[in-house]
Image (cartoon, rainbow, N blue to C red):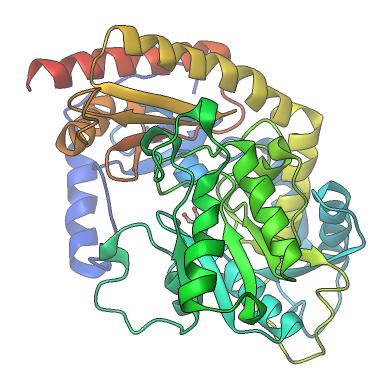
Length: 445
Ligand SMILES: Cc1ncc(COP(=O)(O)O)c(C=O)c1O
């Protein structure tokens, strides 16, 4: 795909895209959320081409999954090699090297001291279900605390903790008993009215002063599950002190700290795990999305003394599929050999460029992020911070029509989560398109 990108040659959606979307409408679940009509035909690096021959700069990576870029040759080669040997043997009943090797490689990069053990599933929600079950089993306690705005998945355990959008929960209750929520450190809209300068993560006090006083005894709480950067909730970056205080509080009460790195992990923030920026050592880390560049894989890795449950307690037929493990091993090598560093460098460039747009566009209330995890919150008024939700939706579509793929996050934010191979020149292209799209949105207000 040696061509100028983006390159939009047809109306959007083009005729082939329209035809496929029509077929999709008839047979695919109506529960999916498609922000705009993008029908991919192929991808390479940070560029995707649609079925009508239009090419786009991808700042979504398929929701932060294609970490090494679309179809990285090393990952494809690893997949092909493993596929030729065997496709499946169920790592819960038999042994194979790819799963063991992946456990070893993950153990070497964990943000807490080893030894560690890993449980392998197929998705983020399965990684979180495994972590929840493990925490309950290990502590013999039932309660779990999560945060408002969090997204942990859509199966019943993780959905009970998810508190992002009511549409994700409406109609599915009652939820798993013993799940509680506390305010997240949303510094742009501080839940306790602090400024970043005066912040001592007082939002964490809610757990001690409200939950532990009125709703649940700390000795009945198995775990606190937290995203070190809230993803679906709006790319919210908490101050380090928030995670420090959570660690102190959980340690004081014998509660396990689970960090959900499904979106923020695997090098995206310029470190392997976002929690490393705060220097906090969790008990369990959950991963998925970028861990295998697009093949389905979810992993919960814990301190070995925590993950010591007996045979039969938890397993998965497909989890840790050898092809997914091979893709993950190739992915982790690429991350180590330069992509984490690229995420740090190009991410800083992207963040600075998007921040500079604030001078020209009053619609931007806040720009935040770490590495190639950048959030842009839109407001109608910077003083009242009124949420510019319809403008945000329009911005996402204006970007699409100009050949830039971005996604919504939270109620009024846009997220940029490109493949970690993004170049500085591509980051500049993204900033230029955002600039033009913001102008278009402001002009029609
Ligand atoms: C932080 C976080 N946890 C868990 C999940 C669930 O992952 P999956 O959709 O693979 O089940 C997501 C998905 O967006 C996520 O962002």
